[in-house]
Image 1 (cartoon, rainbow, N blue to C red):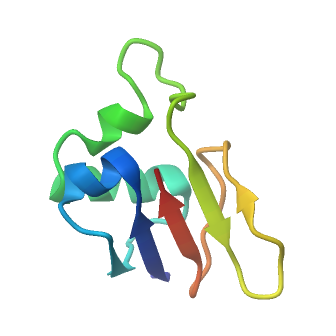
Image 2 (image 1 turned 30 degrees about the vertical axis):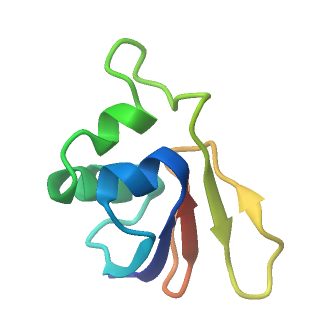
Image 3 (image 1 turned 45 degrees about the horizontal axis):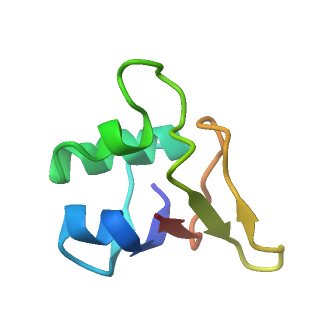
Length: 90
């Protein structure tokens, strides 16, 4: 169960009503995280993965900061999360 630091920017901040939170996810991937967050913040999944194309929305972004590695954008929904990752959703 990875413990993550989540940061929310732009329209994701509006959708969640907060700038970020500490989060223990049951999932292993970025997609698992989005599906889990959608239970807490209904509609969040549709912002990142519109139902009409089932691909990541090009108008959103997910950035990952991991200790000892360069910060990077994430476009693969199956990207594996690790304990201590910082995930920026915008």
